[in-house]
Image 1 (cartoon, helix red, strand yellow):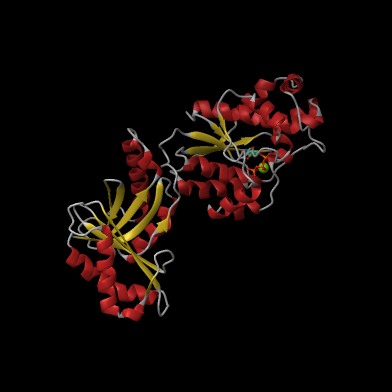
Image 2: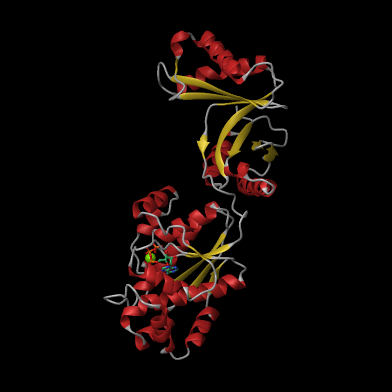
Amino acid sequence: MYNCIICRYHEIATKGNNRNMFEKCLVDNIRHILKTIDPLCRVRRIRGRVWIEPGENRQTFNNETLNAIISRLPDVFGLENFSPAILLPVDMDVIRQTAVQLAPEVFKSTGKTMPAFRVRARRSNKRFPLTSNEIEIDLVTAIAEKLGDNAFKINLKNADITLGCEIRDEFSALYFDNYAAAGGLPVGSNPRVLTLLSGGIDSPVATWQIMKRGSPTDFITFHSSPYTPQETVDKVRGLVKVLNSFQRKGRLFIVNLAEFQKAVRDNCAERLRTILYRRAMFRIAEKIALKEDCKALVTGEALGQVASQTVANMDTINRAVDMLVLRPLVGADKLETIAIAEKIRTMKLSSVQVPDSCTVFAPSSPATSAPVDLALAEEAKIPGYDAILEKIINDIEIDA
Ligand code: ATP
Ligand code: MG
């Protein structure tokens, strides 16, 4: 029965002169998703909303298309919520008749004998003869006349069924469902970044947070073959696949750090190994980011979580690069991060235990506060440091 989907946004609406760019980006992203579901669908921007319609003179969505759209739209950043709806003329008689027609089935679907019900009307068309409040009363009265007084109880705060009614200049719309979407800003409204993605819980969540602020991301992961198994990289590939459902496909740069780690093992103080690995990871990531036009690095670091994430060590690691490093989880509690990982479908995969690159030759007692001078002095002990990194970069494998 639905012939449109009303898509609402929130943060974009607060934008001034740039609002057009954000809206266009949102529409592009919705169109991109629809291409794989049903390319005939039509997407329009009309004053503060995006409307998806069946297109090509089709009267309504078929169920398969509608269900696919409902399952994909929650992943679109920039969208706050959306409702499958029925577009109608700006005519109270038609609106009332349609509401009365639809009501019995919707009420029945709750399985309750007396469901809690409310009507929410919005009127941007100020020439419409009824106010929002009068529209609400009109619709409730008409539905009560049709179904009888005992068919529902009114509850404005906590309703089983909310009938939405929007009156615009050119058309009106009725809807019953309101699905939550991801919020934030449309991916592509901020510059591309490069995420250091391990197989852990944190970095996939950090990726999602940054995409939610509008930056598309490519990924870089470090393994230590033959000291880490193939599963280490396969797990990251699985995570990239999930994360790419929130953006247009980002690439994965796969880097073997083993040669460098051997050099650290053979030449440097054991306690600094993890910090030296991390500084090399940052340097390699920065090189790739510059080459691929990514404007910042992203990590899943959270202050104080492990020895390499103390303020002192984060500072020492950070000083390996000039590029901005975004750490969206720096102040996050692990339980908050896990809750997001569950929501974004990465938790199950992240929980699979496989060896991580950082655990190769890991020190039994890592330094918790290594000044940058100490790290530089240890790095100076590695013969051909730059050449080792260069060779590693030349051997990078790319999943495009
Ligand atoms: P995560 O759960 O994301 O693995 P973590 O709490 O285990 O994070 P660390 O292992 O100390 O923390 O890593 C901190 C950050 O460094 C990660 O979030 C990630 O951004 C980056 N990182 C660590 N190991 C790798 C790796 N093997 N490949 C790419 N990035 C990595
Ligand atoms: Mg990790």
